[in-house]
Image 1 (tube, one colour):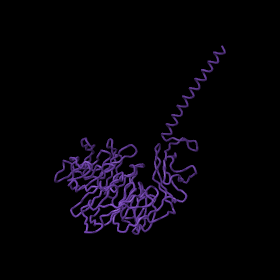
Image 2: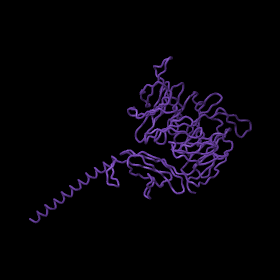
Image 3: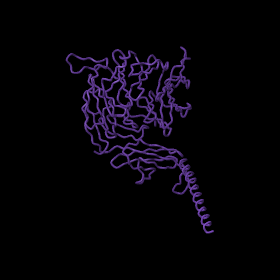
Image 4: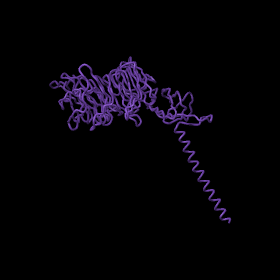
Length: 470
């Protein structure tokens, strides 16, 4: 009898224990669901719906002050739950300058801030290379290398990540049409005008658009292996009005010839049939092309246009009619793809999947160029010194301008300009303006490479500053 009672008690304990475990799991799931939805218990034990701030910085481990509240636990490269609404975030570190921004946390959503960069106050500066005679310079998109160009047929290629700068000579005498070589001369003369330079994503080749006496010619230069360079215009015998690199190492290009879009295979030395007729503008992501073009229904009295998309190997999909020519761009942010159109000064953002309009805004100027920022986190539209920034994280548009006549990219997220000899930098949205150097040449590029060095041109030399304590 006692055995049966003991067994019943044991069974009851097991049942109650399992019931408590099931209940604990249910409560945990409910709590997690509330947390994921943005609900949190504040210091007054009130349940409030909040958001999550994820913030990192260069250098890492900087101190964070949020609305005047700071503690030794608040460091960058971490996440923090915040009440929805506006918060002023300050990032600082001993020996460096500071960074500040007001952000708007939304209920139940993550707000990422990965771009704060703090600059060492007392930086060591040195002359990395004498550049007398240099007339043009182009830096690779990853800021790892630079090509120095002069009026001769002997250019220079430099690896910027090396502590000791050693230029590699580039003989371009057979690549371009506008060169002359005098009898017995060590080097010839380069007389062409460089109009534009684009690099591939892997920073292995640079696509030069050059004005020569006979017209525009395109040259794909491989500075590491010059034998693999090619004068595209001469090789294909075609006058392309526009070329754009289509893959990471520039083996394929998209080209416009007689207003029609083709694919150019550099390795196979071939040009495809017409992909799209009467193209106005185009962009691509992977193997999908987004474009604007002249409509077949256009007449001599009235032109009409449309925007469309094309996956290579498929048929053209017409997305929308437009009343005027339109600039276009494609981007990916998080896991979603977006399409951007600019019709005169009207910016529209579309969801790629169903082409629904997510945002439309009339800008106070008419941009000439659209640039997609690092990892699609922002979109820059600009003309000269005027800029409009669409922050994809906050879905906010800000119009601003740099102080110089034009601008460049210091790294993936920072814009720079040179004004009255001062090197001025801004975040991509125009905030956190700082002056980094003086006596800087305004017609040569500036860049940060390997998060260690700041490079700029000054007094016929390439100057390097250390961004970390030496």
